[in-house]
Length: 142
Image 1 (cartoon, rainbow, N blue to C red):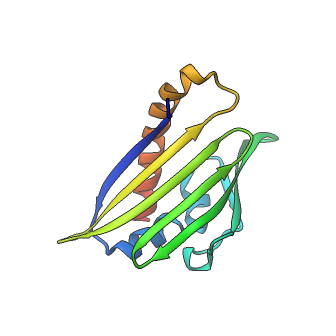
Image 2 (cartoon, helix red, strand yellow):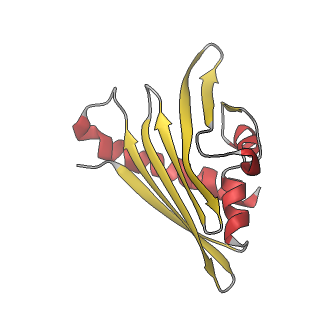
């Protein structure tokens, strides 16, 4: 059974702007609690093959979430980010389609938590979905 989730959000900005906001790693460090992303670069500085790391920690206790850009296009607005870490693995597939008043963002994420029994992974993905939805909305509005 595949663990993962889908988030769809309506946005009042054009698709390429929405994708740039979601992939602005500078904003990630400001918006995601207890997390610092390196390198802190704008979305336009990302390219296929770029690796970045989200470090989530409280003091000395934390974990790294390394990711790689596997596909990126601003027209059409699509991206694939692969999560390569020991704590969180999977992939994020982002597509932003134009609508009459702006755009619709479709975020499809697979989740693999190697430390968690397989039977519990779908429940964990449901919990993660809520947090991701809040963060993505804040990034889009940032």
